[in-house]
Amino acid sequence: MKENDEKEEIKISKDFNMGELVYKYPAAEEVLLDYGLHCAGCFANSFDTVEAGAKIHGMTDAEIDEMLERVNEVLNFQE
Figure 1 (cartoon, rainbow, N blue to C red):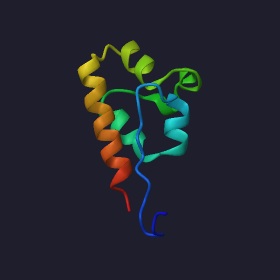
Figure 2: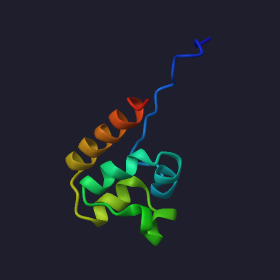
Figure 3: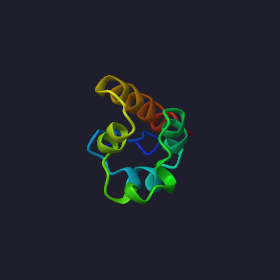
Figure 4: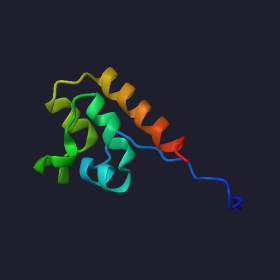
């Protein structure tokens, strides 16, 4: 059993829905914007995965992995 002050780690993957990501974790939007993804206002965010949205914007697999690493860092180190 986890202690009350211990947080469960958030792990966002390539298959995560883009709209759900920005809705559930607003802090992720800043990272997405840094990588050129303006997903919060995009109509496609309701059906695109993180990977699909990133690929549409020309990102490589390595860039997507780097972005997701940063998203997870931000989400797991917020107070």
